[in-house]
Image (cartoon, rainbow, N blue to C red; front, top):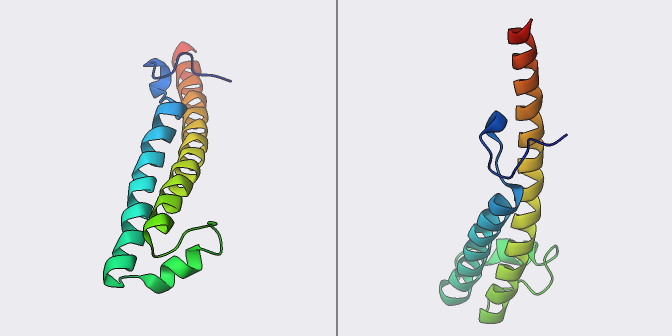
Length: 104
């Protein structure tokens, strides 16, 4: 059940790969800067330590920020990709229902 080409106007589909990359980059930047803020100014150190139980290598340090950026890129991409697949599925089903009602 596909909407056609990535980013097509048919039933307002979005490209899962493009959205996944965009969200992954945004998460990577956030996680890196958050770890570096904790390292330099002590801001949010407790939360970083909790996240380190999920994300290997994530810590309030320079290398922890690099690891956080890598984890943010991967997890953001996966979440964004799945989110847009579900969105496209919902929009295509809605568009088919709307067209079915109009065609009758």
